[in-house]
Amino acid sequence: MRGASPRPPAGEGRAPPRHPSADICASKKREGALDRLGFTAYLGPIMAVKHDPNSKVIAENRRARFDYAIESDLEAGIMLLGSEVKSLRKGQSNIAESYASVEGGELWLINSYIAPYMQAGVFGHEERRRRKLLVSRKELSRLWQAVGREGMTLVPLVMYFNDKGMAKLKIGVAKGKKLADKRATEAKRDWDRQKSRIMKQGHQ
Image 1 (cartoon, rainbow, N blue to C red):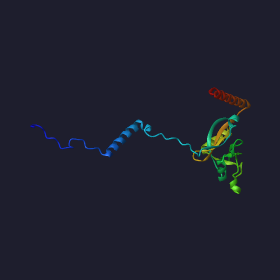
Image 2: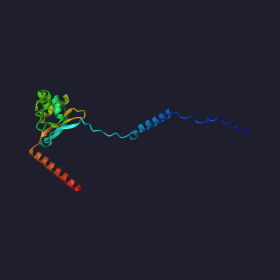
Image 3: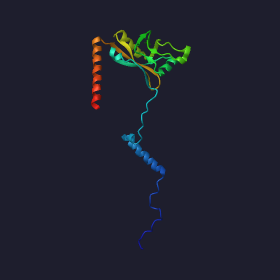
Image 4: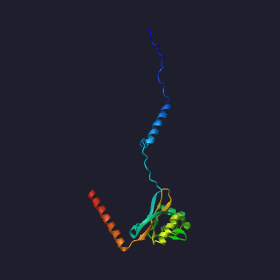
């Protein structure tokens, strides 16, 4: 036919096929845009939080909050012998009758009990030896002032292994309760137990 333009060869005038790398780049650009908007957190699988097997409570001073009003607390490291660490892994310790004291510019744990580790033989430890506690100089100064100037008492609250498997001691900076305060604390505990019992019966 006159005036008709010739048809282009097959394949001409069409968009060339996309290379797989181009699709990957486009996908990354979309992810980047979503990331800036804060949406990519919802695209990936949800990771379950795993419980660290190294973390473990060793011993707890359950009477501490009955006998004392805890004003503040801090975490201290403990210098231990190998036989003591192995004994603590078995949970053989007691801090109920222990206390902490600042002496000679150092912090000490006094009268704590760690059971002997029989496999250590003659290389074992003394059950109630004084054990050095590790805190910063700033914390040590604060504790010294609390005891010396404010008449506070340093009460061991709980001994535990942290998530790195290191033995730690939580210390309470406390004031001794008067008899009336102890009675009030005991009455509150009794009431809390009764409330818990009533709630359990209500759900049955």
